[in-house]
Amino acid sequence: MNGRAIGRIVALATAVAAPLGLGLAVAPAASAAAVTTLYYSSSGAPDYLGQIDQGAANWNAAVTDVKLVKRTSGATIKFHEIHSGGSYTNTNGHGRGDIYLDTSQVAEGFDPTRIAAHELGHNLGLPDHYTGPCTELMSGHGPGTACTNAKPSAAEAAKVQSLWVNGFAATAAASQKVAY
Ligand SMILES: [Zn+2]
Image 1: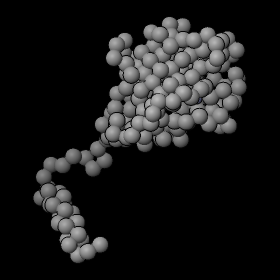
Image 2: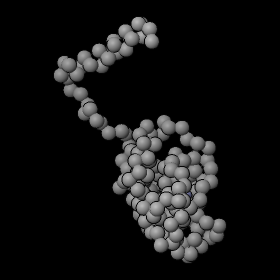
Image 3: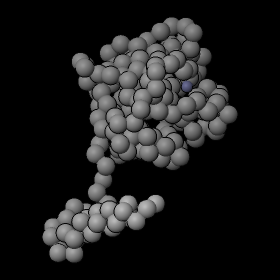
Image 4: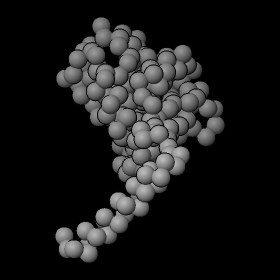
């Protein structure tokens, strides 16, 4: 780095520091990041309305940078119901996607609230981790039908929190299909 660049940085630091030194009103040092609201619709999966809302509520209880709100029109995350082939989502991993809940998978014994929360996890940016324990949402079908946990682990919540700290500014990937 040359001397001129260093000088510029020092000047910037001084400019930032000056108002603080003058004791002017300043924002709290640890001001929270703005919340990004994502809208989801569940009308396409009428058998799982309560489970979908619970899955969204579990995410909302675990993270603060992004919030899931149900809305009938204009939603970017849309739930649908299918009857074979397994639950999955087509998503860009950053707030936009279609989620397909498979009634036959629920009939096999897989918990629909966990499935809904898992697929929301994909839409929030998390990948599958089938070898993980039941305490992880993204272990999906891995732990079997006995696993009904529908809440993200602390690590999963922290990851989503980091992915949304800059709202939609993060680069969204091309939409891809990922399963439960
Ligand atoms: Zn999955």
